[in-house]
Length: 201
Image (tube, rainbow, N blue to C red; front, side, top):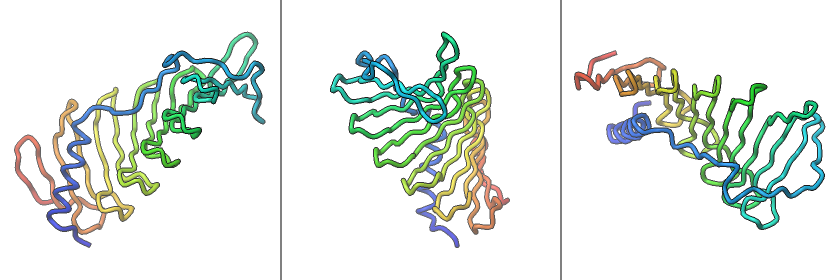
């Protein structure tokens, strides 16, 4: 089914804006407000991970929870969970690899209990980002990075579960945009951002 010209233009503007902007991920910091341990004796999960709870805003409720693997005298953080708005619910989940590098980050941006943004890392560097733009529980924008720089965006602009817009970057700048107008999964029109001209697919 074809999208109206207005809807297509709006969707295109949204994607271009997201593509040109920098990373707006929430960056919680363990040091904010001065973390205060809540449990004198940490508990353990079924997997044997030590659970450490911290109070960041001094209301005696956990706002940061660390899951730690204890190996001898060393502690390896496996996961961190943050309550950013102090409502008692987790808003940010961070998973780490065996090298203590951030591997995955999930965020609930509107505090409704559902994940809206996921960041994937390799070697501690961002390689992929998935966003749920309409907050329906399904990602509709996928952004890919090479050496920390945006290389490609794929998006479902009409929420039918299919990618219908592709945006490619050269040296961090938008190079060309492809649009699938008839929903067959193929680009019907390419727009070159350099030449400012549209060609058929």
